[in-house]
Length: 231
Length: 105
Image (tube, rainbow over all chains, first blue to last red; front, side):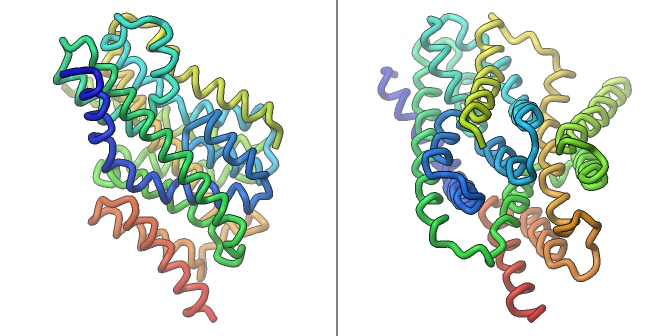
């Protein structure tokens, strides 16, 4: 396959995954505006950070008055899952020049990882396979920026009484639906949620997200290790 | 909100994506580490989901007649069966609107 064919395959593969990204981006834009951020800043976050979940966490901590240190650490924690994506892709991209690695890293988000990982596994020998990630990743990028702009426009007309901040909880809940059937994930989720709810008032500096996440990851680690022993 | 906070968040996010691709020649994370990293969404998202649902504006626990809890349960049930992100969000939002604008009025 030629470079451009692989590039378009990336776009086509990631297309269906873009359907839920649109409302997510709109919700992000609306909430940014409702919290009183400027349109430039709301869109600027989408361009500079380009990570939906972490951007919404950033907004939520901002509205709670968290310090920049806690905010930055929490964003890092939310995005630590990308370390996994990078580690998996390292061997597929190791032959590329540093410029390629710099560009592709910018668009290595959940949806792009999901589709390009499948493509890379089946096309290990193809030297142009990275064009798939380029196509998938920049499709995500464009869709995310357009939905952010839609949200910014809607945010100035949506009345506050609609209680749209509840959609933050709903959006994150929706991102976990595939894990609802896994017993261990449910335990990890409950630990995180309960620690955060108790810690919301008890833990200073709005650090409840980090503390809850670390407690839950500790439980996840214990669950993983005990499971391996059995095998 | 300062631009500097956004830029630092951007840098740290970029490094989570770039560092492994830059440092590793091959996939060296063992299965255990990967398994644990795969729990990151389950470990973090509930910390964002729970407090706004269960706590009221003053930060006290609010369990009785709380429309957010009921709407979240509806969303979980719909999400469990449909496995659709959009259906989950809308099920929760519609039941929440119904509760606050119709049922509790």
